[in-house]
Length: 167
Image 1 (cartoon, rainbow, N blue to C red):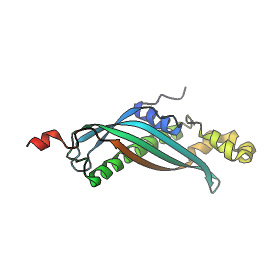
Image 2 (image 1 turned 180 degrees about the vertical axis):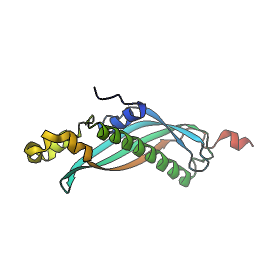
Image 3 (image 1 turned 60 degrees about the horizontal axis):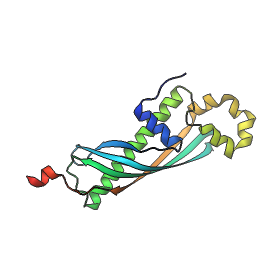
Image 4 (image 1 turned 30 degrees about the horizontal axis):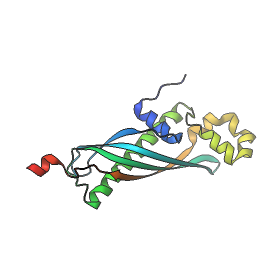
């Protein structure tokens, strides 16, 4: 066994394996840095293998659907600008999680997400003509482009911070 993934890396691995489970994400409010907790209720992953100068590369396109569970920030979920800022913060968090998972996988030269299968499926001749023999080394050099889009579908019944409203 090479190593064990922590909770965050396991979430990143779920995105890469196209098997996202319901989980919570906490981000800091873009305006005030106070925590906002959301549930990721749905995740869609599309991963496209390609080559850049004979180096394996992957376009990782992720879509997340989330619902706000707790908002301790000053964000007003009725304001489109605030909602977009929160969606971007969640997208950035997911991207960072997946990026960290990829770094660990590449560091230990282990393709836990089975991305080599995608290369084999799209480029079978390249795979058979030597790529499979040294996949762990090639994987360690692979390039990744990660795009994340988040849609917050449910902001709850209270759209503003209750404590702030009472002041």
